[in-house]
Every structure is written in structure tokens, then in C-alpha cells.
Length: 151
Image 1 (tube, rainbow, N blue to C red):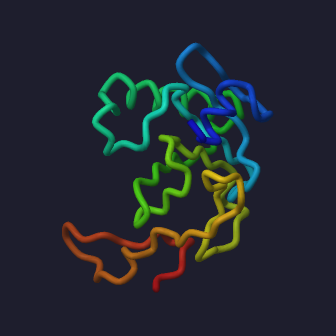
Image 2: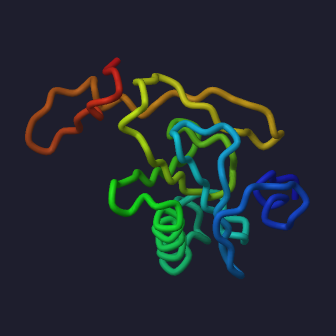
């Protein structure tokens, strides 16, 4: 398999590891989009949360390890974001399930793009999830994140 995250999990590609157990790995993102940006992956290859193999146990374990990584980085008191991108329109550029743990966001400037490593190991731009800014705020409608510009 030619998956960059599988190679990182197997130790074939070096990474700054934060947490690791038999089933999951958390490591610092080389293309950080926040002062603290960690990726949490299952070691077993699963494409994303829409994959049939992304069962409740796997997804629950992923969120638990994301919480543990945030705690290990000292983010539990100030807060953090956990982001899952699914498919092309969701901004997923690496076809291996992963959660982004983002901390220290109060010091960030708004950005309309994010950068992530693609399957070939190169940088690829993807748009932010600011589609919500196109909708009027109201009961049951989406609202743009206050730090993201509405398009």
C-alpha cells in the first residue's frame, strides 16, 4: 500500500510522535495550521468515517486518542478543536482516516485555505469549511466560525 500515514505508522517515515499504542498513533503535523497541530490516526488503514470499516469501536478509539493527545499537549484547560475531513469536498487530502487536534487557536489569523500532505507526500491546498457562511443564521441553519471569513 502506498499510503503516507501507513508508512508513518509502520515507522518507515519519521514523525514527531505524541502518543502511540497498538492501534493508534498521534504525531505532529508537518504542515501545522495552528500553534499546536497533531494528527491522530488508526494504524489500520481506513479511508475515512464514511468507510464501511470505520466502525463504532474504531471511531470511538480515534476520538479518545485525540482527547488524550490534547491532554498530553496541555490543551485540556484552554480548549482545542478536533476536525475530521471526509472526501474531496470535505477537504480530505490523505486517504487515511485521521483527526486533526488543533490548539492555541486564539493567536491565529483567519485563513481561507489549509495545507495538508497528500498521498504522494507533497503539499496540497484545500479550502476551509466556510460554506456555512453562505447561509443565513437561524434555527437549524449552519453558521460560519467567527474566525473564518464567510464566502
